[in-house]
Image 1 (cartoon, rainbow, N blue to C red):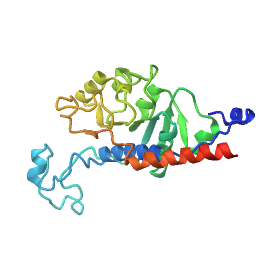
Image 2: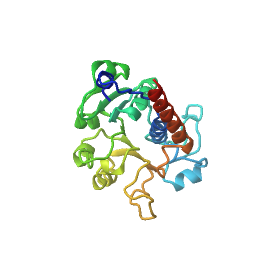
Image 3: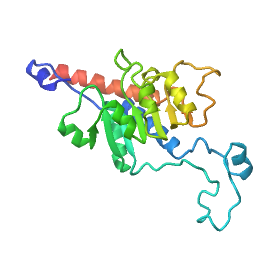
Image 4: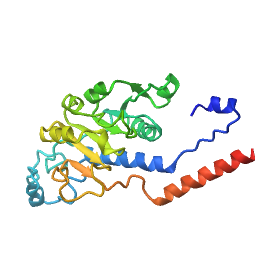
Length: 248
């Protein structure tokens, strides 16, 4: 919203920070962390037998290990700090994710239709790149754009085939922003370290969802918005803004 244009025309512009956006950003970041640390893949696999049953090359502790650290030999566990996060859409949700990424000492790059001004880029410590470069450079990608004619199928075979090996992709926006077939092909080819999905190509889903067999895909049933209380809090703030605008 062009606040100056509204002010010039005597139209009150009263923005507010939506609780829902914070909740959605939190969910995106939690999916990134779950995939980076393999917390879902290794959940409750505490014995050698359980680990081996799931394909992990576990072995008994010996003195070559450091204080029992990763005795199970779980490979592919990633650090957040020092890594690069690519955000597709540095809007109201993506900016929360950028702030948390900065707190984790991650480099933040972003892409969207229009580049932000220098002041905003400095505020979120983010650098503008093309979509292709974002996938080539990022260890993690988080998608935060709306679904429309220009974003449907935005991410396809070109980006996924040229992506940084082991990339972790989180989509809490809309499933169709990523081309389904291209994503499945990239998973089959072992190009992708993990995928986090809170949005799906069919909702509600069914037992035939092609992403279910992949151990490195974490799927939640479109719950990023969190408690319905979040929406009620936002509605209360909106009504309060309208009342203040009318009375001023």
